Length: 162
Image (cartoon, rainbow, N blue to C red):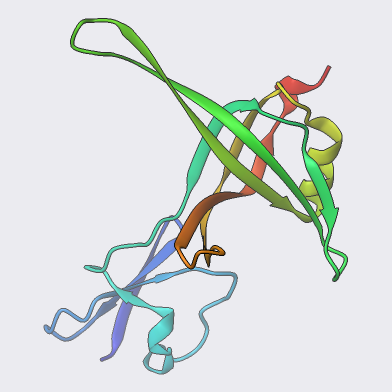
């Protein structure tokens, strides 16, 4: 396959081939410059246009249910754990307003964890952007348990400063 053109669209580069076998590919641009021969690009660095992206992203807005718990790991990394309660309101068939509350565990790492430990407190409003992480384990009775945790990548607590 010979690449005849490339087109940068947002954060991706579309590579167009000269043969008729639907060999057009798309590559995510990830902090590297494309200066090599396109025929030598490893397979893991590109995907066909028809493949779907994986997305693991979550945005949560709510109030802290308790003060953040700051810890330092054995390797010296800071971690801050806290819980966020978020509400959803809807009407049932009888037109009554129903409140549904969801409690989510959040963990942040590094400098973000240290900042969360300083500025967050129980009851403060917070917006968390991050990804979901699943934890699985067996309890004392041998039952499989699982829990989802939000790993914070960005925390907006500017409204919570006093």
